[in-house]
Image 1 (cartoon, rainbow, N blue to C red):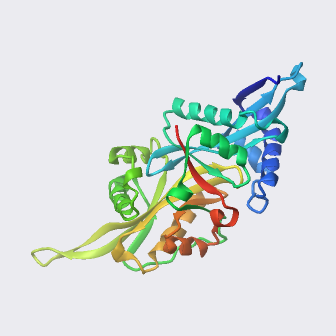
Image 2: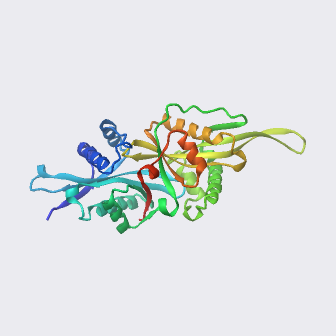
Length: 331
């Protein structure tokens, strides 16, 4: 009987990891979506932008040891639940399948998450990866693509992300002082999208996670500049935060260092003024300054406004084009 070792990948494994990733891409028919070069992949691994668990089969000698499977994972931030583990591209070479190895990889990733006090895990599931689906079903999973009608979108870095000028509005990077107001905007968004049952992050946790000490996410906001008259008929200029968009680093081996975009919201009175596109463009620019290879978004099937907005910037609906599902894995 074969003997297997499960361990974290080290630098000497990186060439073999990329070979496994390419096998996965070909098998899952994701060649068009695959944008990560070997050089970039190796640099990203050395920069610890992601980690991987590998399965090594033991031979009679040290030289006979062979990596026959892996799962990649990174950490990103979701405003609904907080810090989240993102396992993906789980692959076992065909000769070693149907032995429960995918499930063990998931279990190792879960343990790593719990040890790091991370209570949330989301993944993407391709229709051809039947063995990964089976393993997720054994470990507990909920398809949010089916249950909440959420689609996975990806967007390459656009060639130009210049922002448009909006009279009476300022679009800028959010600061720690803005986090309380941003949280209240997200509460409005959650109520509008009927996601209250999924909202687990308190205001204090949200502000802590966005502070300079942790910086698990960044934000771009829209301020409305207007005059308010007081009882003495004097007026002063007031700046109200009326829109926001959050971003978080999220490594996805198919495309490299990505940014997860979420929580785009404008108060109803500010819609129809081109602010949504200006806000998105400003956020893309903020992320590009920090270096990145693309963007990932989860958009509700009925949110035609957001779909039209990101499609205008060449985003692709992966759920529609490749039937990829957005999966919540139960810890």
